[in-house]
Length: 585
Image (cartoon, rainbow, N blue to C red; front, side, top):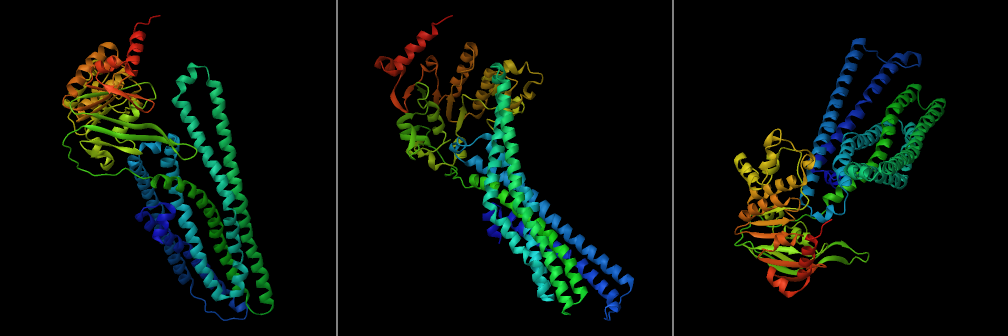
């Protein structure tokens, strides 16, 4: 049973065991609701015995009061057990699932995120987990609990009188068959609803992220109309999903009430035939109210579980992704990065063939040298740098660091040896001090300040109201582009790793600060493996080795002088930038 719940609902082992406990608790609670029925039947039988020709001993009133109190205490105990077993454990499992998904996403290759919208992943972690939390605290344990309780009570009723029990319970399997039979239609409507919610979230997020561009281009009214249309569509899909579910569930719940009618008819016939007495029929009528109420709720919960499974499938999709693994505690004799006949594709074509963006790329970035990657846009420069850090795994060939294939090294272990400054800087809504300290956890304030000074950050940090303790907003929203990039460089300086990846590291700096940062970088890169990407050719003219990438391959490589003398693509790019530098308004 535990393994079934693990596979079915993507639960942890502890979560599955807690769910079994919750089902047992719900079953006991529903069964305890039958105790008052038994007590009521006993009292009525004792009181009415003289009028129907029977003889029953009537117990003192205080005995019935004591029994009633005991029943109430038992029901309260079972309700408390149910609450602890459902709500508390479901909250814990929901938290564990969020952490589990986040840990999984931390280890999944970046190729997965290229296929998913941010709103989709956010919905899975937040909304889907919240929905599943409700399922584990309400739908699933109450569904299984109600079914098990009805089976147990039904057996008791069959033993008491199988004719009345059959007249009462024949509708139960048909009612469940109606709800289950409509699952395909319900799943279709629920999927459309879920997709519309994702589109709604994506549309709102896109609007917030691009509000500046929307206003700058006078597109506010047009874009808001698009958002309104998305919201209306989502509302429509929500109503359709609810109606589709209601058609089957309400029909099944109405059928349950027919069981009471058939019970009355069958009971009346049996009484007139002298086969049962009135009190037996009365007991079954009272029991019917206690049986059908949880069953009606169980039908709703069954439909809710169908909808929840769509959310669970999205979570399973993430959990089933292959993660990047490898050796830990790897010792490198040197830090040369070697690309050997590397081929890489982000996507597949319609015929499932790989759409390669890199083909047969081979070069060596040696330790103690600066290797520059240049070439036209779309040539594969940024892709090469990200492959060197194993953000993706290559489809063919191999990449080695110090002679060890990086696909055999655990990604976090590999990245301990890398300091990276990308073109798109990511900062956190925290202080400047902590944003820089991200480069090396445990670094002292003194070390952080030293790195900031080397990256020329001191100039603008001193102007901040709280200096290094100033919170810079989401993704550094209170800073300029150049300031954000200098903080990113300070991180790399603080980490002081043996491999340095610089992707347009000085692109957002003015000429004065670019010169100062380049001096700081010169101190940083001594005796290290440095891979630099730059569109400004003059910034890499002094590189030890230049690799020219074009159309996903290595067009040529060598030193600045060698490539200029060769008169190839590098020479052409150099001439174009030299001429563009002379252009004025």
